[in-house]
Amino acid sequence: MELISKQSIREYGKGLALIVILLLVWEGIALLIQNNYILPRLGEILSVLLQPAAPVLGGESLIQNTIQSLKEVLTGFLCAAAVAIPLGLLIGWSKEVQTYLNPTIQILRPVPPIAWMPFAIAWFGIGFNSILFIIGMGAFFPILINTVDGVLGVRLRWIEVAVTFHATTFEKLRTVILPGALPVIWTGLRVSFGVAWMCVVAAEMLPGTTAGLGYLIMYAYNLGQLQVIGAGMIIIGIIGLGADTLFRAGQERLFGWQGRE
Amino acid sequence: MEPVLSIDGIKKTFNDSEKSCPALAGVSFNVAAREIVCIMGPSGCGKSTLLRIIGGLDYADAGRIDQISGKKDGKPSAAMVFQDHALFPWLTVYENIVYGLRLSVQNLPEEEIAKRAESLLELTHLNAFALSYPHQLSGGMKQRASVARALAIKPSILLMDEPFSALDTFTRRELEDEVVRIRQDLKTTFLMVTHNPEEAIYLADRIIILSGRPAVVSDILHIDLLYPRDPADPAFIRIREQVTRMIQGKA
Image 1 (tube, chains in turn brown, orange):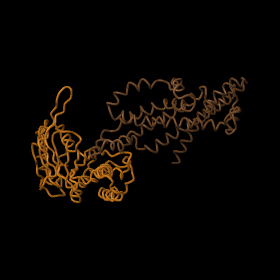
Image 2 (cartoon, rainbow over the protein chains, first blue to last red; image 1 turned 90 degrees about the horizontal axis):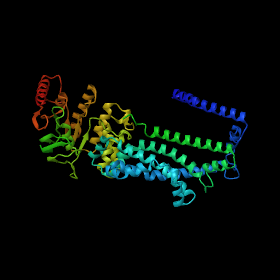
Image 3 (cartoon, chains in turn brown, yellow; image 1 turned 135 degrees about the horizontal axis):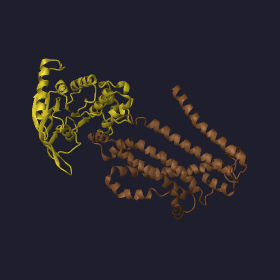
Image 4 (cartoon, one colour; image 1 turned 180 degrees about the vertical axis):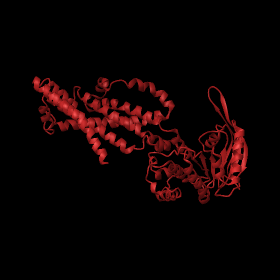
């Protein structure tokens, strides 16, 4: 146990070392060119980050902006999952449904979520609902595709076991298909959360928004406050990393059986 | 004795786009209560197909299957054990064992389920592993859990498709002894497909030998040796030679 933690600390150390080097290079160049509009000093970014509760540029605080973005992304993500998982189970389960839906899905899938923005604004107006729609569009497809793959990957033998015990269709779904596909669905959720997080930032950059990290970055850009942009980017990155770590930890905890059947 | 299972004129042909491939050409036999019957035959003769049809995983083109239920509700119940244990890797051994029970008997009180599971864990020597997951068990233990899962619904007949062929010799003998013991304790009826003559003679009251494709029943052998049987016994060896010759003749 101790060995493992020592090893993982060493690995973290290696990753951290590169970050430190990059920061030093940044700071070195910033010192050389002495221009805050091209490369702000690390100290300036840090001073924004170290006062997370203070109003930034006369608006909301960093914490408030972060909460706003998280609220949007979680809502959009959960809505997408609520539609994509049942639909994915259905498509994976029924060849017929798949034949009908597949062309539509494959055409819609490559469309960047942001391209929906004009429609979103026209349909839902400016604000929360439009952002939700954009995030939902981004989060939807990774979950859907992985759910379908997950169902198709469920071992036939497991389903046969359910059949020998006279399971109904719903019982097969609940006791075999869903748990058997869940590890792959989980991967879809992980990917999807990353996409949703990117979408929220992009969606908030559009006019009419008044809060959120994406909004903050855009607002700071208009005022030429690059140190605020840097701070916003760092928070976005760290939250993305945190979410991914949580999903990975969940994967190991919940699906330790994978690959060891 | 009254048969638990009676199959009559089972026919099955596999059709693909190119050609049709007859597998079973009218297979008929009975299995009596508390009997251990082994099905043998040249490989590819349709043994597994026959078992799958009886277990409801495949359809026969023609023929009748009658299962006489020993149960109060009159529902026939065959349970199946596969060559690969087919346990659900996301469930504990306990939850795997009661899986079929939960499905087949709706709203069974949890204490009742626990009681049944306890006795099956006892029977299959898995008490200490109730909360383990399948990937933490050895091959023999997995297959014992799989047998326990099938026995949990108190099946009128237990269908086993080469259940022990993936196990090493010693584990295999151990599980074969368990089959004999389970029949003694629970009065279970077994119908088992095997390709191993020694296993069939070690276990079976009767061996049903199928011909090559398309299969019909070509011989039925009554094994009258007393349990526990000894593979080194000259009578055992004589029967084994006989069975081997019979199967080789069919290929």
